[in-house]
Length: 327
Length: 262
Image (cartoon, rainbow over all chains, first blue to last red; front, side):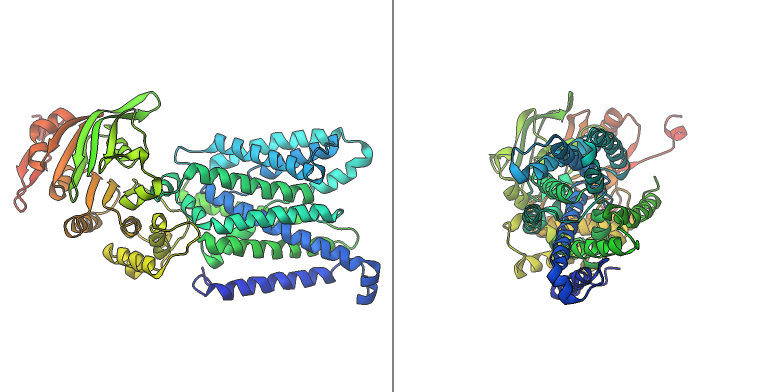
C-alpha cells in the first residue's frame, strides 16, 4: 500500500507541496461573495481570505504533527489530540482566560493557558492509561481519554454558562472550530509556535522512530527516554494549545492525516513529520472550503466538518484494530 | 568482560534477585535457566542497565554500568527483549538502520558506512532478501531474525537475548540459535540468553546458570548444571538425564507421570 514509499523524497514532497498550493488557490477563490478579482481586492475580501487560508494551513499542519507525535509516544496509531482529551483541556484553559479576562501575558495569555490545559491533560491521561512498558493501549486510552474529556467538557460548558450573554455566541462559535482571523497578531503567534514545534519534530525525528519501538528498546538503542518523552509532550501540547487558542476545537485532523501519510510515505518520522505537516495544511484548507460553501447561507463550523470525516474513520480503524488484536 | 558482584535487584517491595555473582568472559555463550518467576528476565535487565541494583554492582570492563553513558553502552551491548512487537510497518532495512542510532550523532543522517553495516547485519541474520518488506508482514521467525539484525547493526560486543525462540516452530528455533552460535564462534560476540528449553540450552551454551527463586542454584558447564538431582531440586520434577547420542551433551528425557512416579 505504501506506493510512494520508495519513490525519492523530492517527488513525494513536491506533489504534497503542489497539493497545498492548489488547496490555497481554491480557498482564495471560494466564498459566498461571487465577485470579480478587482472588486475582491478593493473590498479587502482577498486579504480576509488569505488570512483565513493561512490560519487553516497552520492549524492543519499543527494538529497533524501533534497527532504524529502522540502516536509515536503512546505507541498507538489511534492516539490523537481530540480523542485524548488534549484539545478539551486546551479549550478549557483558553475559555477560562477569555471569560475571566486574564491578560497577564498580553496576547500570549490565551495560548499560554491553552498550553497549560493541554499539557495537564496529556500528563493525566497517560498517567491513567500507561502500561508498564510505556505504551498506552488503545482500550485504556479510550477509557481515560473519554472520561477526562467528559469532565473537561462539563467544566467548559459551565464556563460558557457563566459567560455574559453578549460574549456567548463568540465563545460557542470558537468552541466549534473557527478559522476566521480576527487578529493578525494571534495568527502570527500560532504560526511561530507551530513552526517551532514542526522544526523540533523534524530535527528530532529519529527519536520519534525510536520511541515508537517502545521505552525499553529505545533505551537500549541509547535514547534518554524520559527526556525525549517530556520534550515531545511539551512540544505537542504547545502546538495543540496554540491551535486551539486561535481556532477552537477541531477534532480528528491528527488522526486522518497521519494515517493517510503513513500509507503513502511509510512510518519513518523523518519523512512522516514533514509529509503530515504539508498534507495537514492542505486538508484543513480544503475542509474549510467545504465548510464555507456547503450551506447556501452561513457556514458549517470547521470542527463539525472534520468530525464528520474523522469519526467514521476512527471507528473503522478501531474495528480493524479489534480484528487484529482479537480483543 | 561483564562482572556481577553480589547483585540484589527487584521491583517495588519484591526482591527478585538475591546475592547473584557471576562473570561473563569475552566470547562466552552463557545460558540462563530456571522455572517461571525465578528472576531470569530480571537478571538480564540488570545486566543491561535497565534495572538499577538495590545492592551489589554490575561492571562492564571494570566500570560501573550505571556510570556509563547510555549511548556508549548501546554501542557495546544490545538487548532483545522477550516478545517485542513492532506495531508500525517499518521495513526490515529501516529497522536495521535504527540499530545504528547509538553510533550516530543527533543531526547526522546515516552514512554509506552505516548502510553497509546494516546490510551486513541483515545478511548475517539472513533477512537481506526481505530488506524492503514491512516487518508487520513477516512470519514470527523472520521478524525475530530482523530484530536480531537490528541488534547486530549496533555492532555490540555483548548480545543479551530473552527467550529468543519463544513461540517459534522447531526449524526457526534451530535456525536462530545456529545463527547466534555462529556469531558467537566466528566474531567472538559474547552472548547471554535466557532459555526455557533445557535441551536447547545444553546444546548451544558453553556455560549455564540455573536460578532458583532469585538465587544461583547451579553454575557451570551443561554437564555440571543439568543433572537429575538439580532438576528435581529446582523444578520439582523427576527426569532422566542422558548424554545426547550425537553431541554427548546432557539431554533431559521426559516421561509421562505414570512411568516415573509408578
